[in-house]
Amino acid sequence: MHDAPTETRRAAAAGHREESTAGSPARRCFLVGGAGALAALPLLATGRAAAQPCGLADPAEPPTPTPTPGQGMPTPEEVLRCLAEGNERWVAGELLHPNQSVARRLAVAAGQDPLATVFSCIDSRVPPEIVFDRGVGDLFVVRTAAQTNDDLIQGAVEYGAQESVTPLVVVMGHQRCGAVVFAVDALNNGTEVPAHLVAVVEALKPAYLAAEPLPGDQVDNTVRAQIRLTVDQLREDPLLLPLIGDHLVEVVGAYYSLDSGCVEFMRP
Image (cartoon, rainbow, N blue to C red; front, side, top):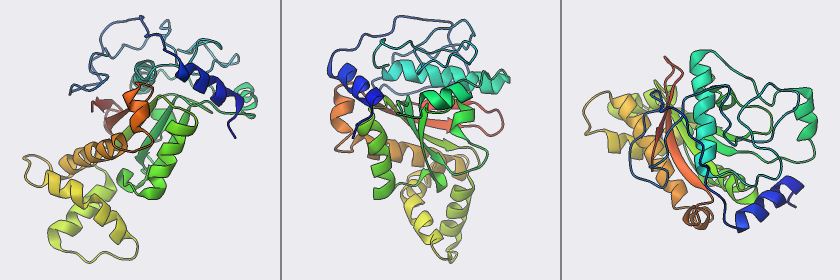
């Protein structure tokens, strides 16, 4: 059964959503390439005065980019701006910690209306809610070793985008991913892999093969190949495909730097 916020979101999604016209200075941290549906989107500089639609407001929290009830469903572009701005606050050490109060907990207890689904690695240094400076009820988060995908994980991502119509799905890999280091070493050396780690290595093999002929750091190339392949898988998902075609949902890749804390969004 759909909760009330989800039904409101679905009703908004059924009509034509208005594009955001707000703007702010160009950002430098978030390097973006490609020519997908979001290619024209400027990534925005963080500012406490910025007012991009960004999720349900929490009256107990300091001002943060959030829409007010009745504004309708945010676009993928608006959600991406929100996450980009939150990440810049994380990089700068100026976190707002939005939607992390008791009031927020109570407000979403009866139903959730998340902004985005983030599919990321299990690495303890890459917590999506902190990386994007979000709070309770803001994100569906799916995490596996090196964001390896299978039917169960695909179903979890489908749930976020289809059931609650989260406008944005982010596949986020990261610098020096331990699972990728392990898989690359095993595949390079023919090392015997114990127990269920075999499944992790096999899941990363297509990315390993895609990255193998590339110049540069083999691990980093494999991380980026895994992001791209997973984005491609999700963009071809039969449940997500019509939502993407109607511009209600977008799937993007993201690469997180452990050193800087900066997220680089990768266009489809």
